[in-house]
Image (cartoon, rainbow, N blue to C red; front, side, top):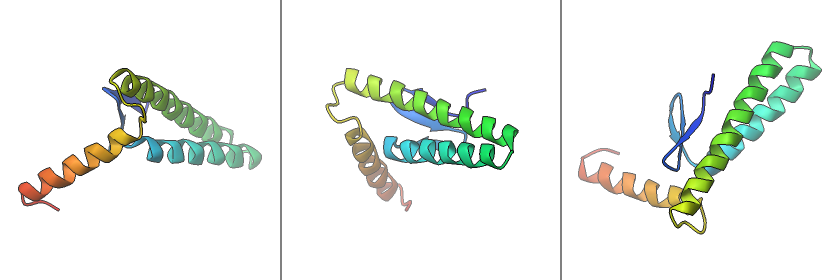
Length: 96
């Protein structure tokens, strides 16, 4: 079961959309946790972390490909634009 997927250039998790940089950090975290779990003999936890890291890496690759196909030379730039859009719209809506 995939916990992370790419949709229209975005990376979507069970708790919302995240940017490419955050997804890369999270994938690295899961990979490190998998290694530590395996060394501690917690093989089920290691497999879970390996699966989540792999899901994220696949979502990162798919989102990057989509963004490049959409014309982004720098795929991470799309996160900066969407963050600015959200902040602007939140301010107009009276949000934070």
